[in-house]
Amino acid sequence: MAFNNASEDYVGAGFSLETRVRICSGKACRKHKGRVKKLESVIDDHCRVGTIKCQGFCKGPVAVVERTGERFWFTRLRGNDLRNDLDAFVDGGKLSKRLKRRLKKQR
Image 1 (cartoon, rainbow, N blue to C red):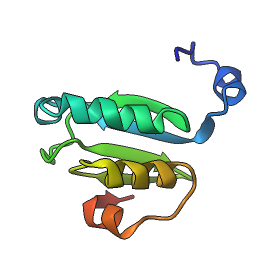
Image 2 (tube, rainbow, N blue to C red):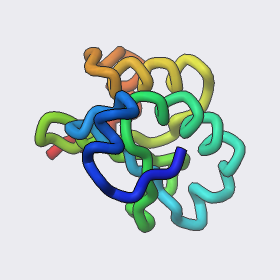
Image 3 (spheres, one colour):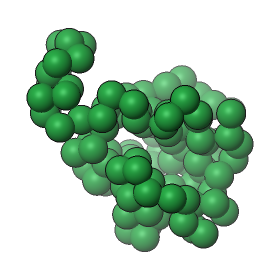
């Protein structure tokens, strides 16, 4: 779904303007292209998904979730369970035990 950066478009489509997910586009994360596409397909119904430059963790795929003024960095987001946990977290849920193990840092 393409948007032209107008906030009304995001809200009208059911997106949360408070939550954004950015997926690393560095060389190591690009090796996991299939996993990244699956990750994007799970979470793009709930928020805006974009890319960021390499975060230097090199344990891909790496994603940054910006939610309620905080940033959460997750590494090695592989497998259906983690994708579903991230989807629930992006949708306003709590951090699961699996996601907590993948949490790199929080600011």
